[in-house]
Image (cartoon, rainbow, N blue to C red; front, side):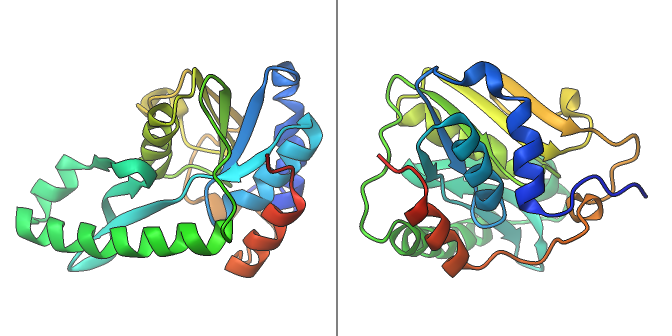
Length: 212
């Protein structure tokens, strides 16, 4: 399989070249922790835009935690994959237990990553949501909800790699992707270095980015 990106920083630099039209548009670049933040850092630096995060959490099926039945985000945002819930027989109570647990973890992650800094104001601005790739689109969809709840006038999802994005109902005004493979298997398959991003790395990138 063709490798397209050396690492997340390389992916961010390649993605930034596709976003030049948004320079000077009062845009805010927000990364999806953890892996999206190194990509977003390069985009924000290239565009001269402020950098922040939108924190989301996957809702894993109780019996198969790696399978997403939805996602939640800041500001009470939530999307559910009704097909997965029905197919695997997840009850309303089971979903509530998972969501309550993940909401606590989400709030803790927000406090950790921002380190007491105020959230960048998204009201009336173009918000560029960046991740290191899209698989199912659940986290991207909930991030769009968050951005709109916080007042974004235009939402752009920008990623290095994704499956056929025309088939994904993400809720963005525009989706920009560097590489759409003919046969998509996994985001990491298109990175030479896809080592996990740590919380410490995210905090350091946010601290050195242009937060406002």
